[in-house]
Image 1: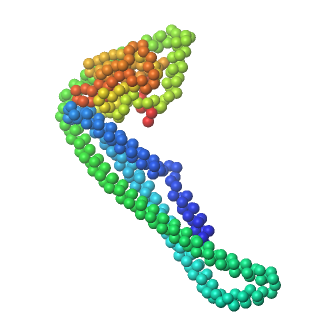
Image 2: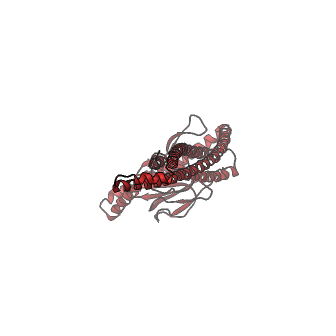
Image 3: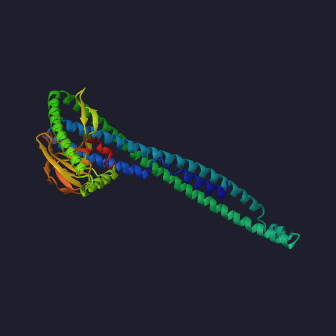
Length: 395
């Protein structure tokens, strides 16, 4: 293979090494892994606070469930990174094999050149070859041929040197990738062991909590009653707002409300979260995590968070109502035109009814119950229709 073909092959192989658009890059996978490690730290902190006051609570189970989900995501990130390295190693092996073939061919070509040069090494032979020319043009042509042949030998040596250098680089590259892969394989084994331990803890928790069914049912009923009272109040306030909007259909106040509604709607999937943590209970109907046959209806989401976490308004608006309940603590209803956000499960409130609030303004502090669970109940409504907050919050 000629030097030109060698270079072309290297270019083709290097282009082939770029990941397809559907495949994540190494940098993306490492970022994803780091994010999962940070999530693990956050969940571990929440889990620690939950178990500090009382062992075997629903809050502990929710934190363990989330910890398992993040652990599985971390393992998948490591597996994807290993798979990417496997692809790189295969490509490196292909390049090394091609380079070795090129090097062998180049050396054979160079050996043939040396043999031809030795045959013509006699100075008299070269002079005879030159001066036996029939014309000056033929003499010049033979002289130029001899010069080009010498240059060709020089280029062949340079091509051999270049391929040898590239081969050495590729060998070092593949050794580094293999070492990196071995480190990742060790990480995968360790994280899989962690996952096994977490799932054992999950099973033990479910078994223990199942024996506390009577107490869990009572807590569930108390919470249902408190939420039903809150929902009734929310609907009353929203109906009052709708009636007021109908009366002021052509007023400046209504025009501002329409503009605020439009702005709120335009920010769908861009809103910041009202608190850090994880979703411990999603929107809509779902099975109770322990009691079989019990279906839970959630008109919002529950965000399990850290003790004394500050709660923020997700968008500008006006505080329409502040309620308090001995079971779920304070609740704040914020109006955003025809949209409403509800923040429940607070032990402190930093705002008052009728106050204007801005985006990301701290409006209260989350309550930690007797089991050590710090959980914000967050709802989002368009008039009286409950919407899934996760579809509106930033992913």
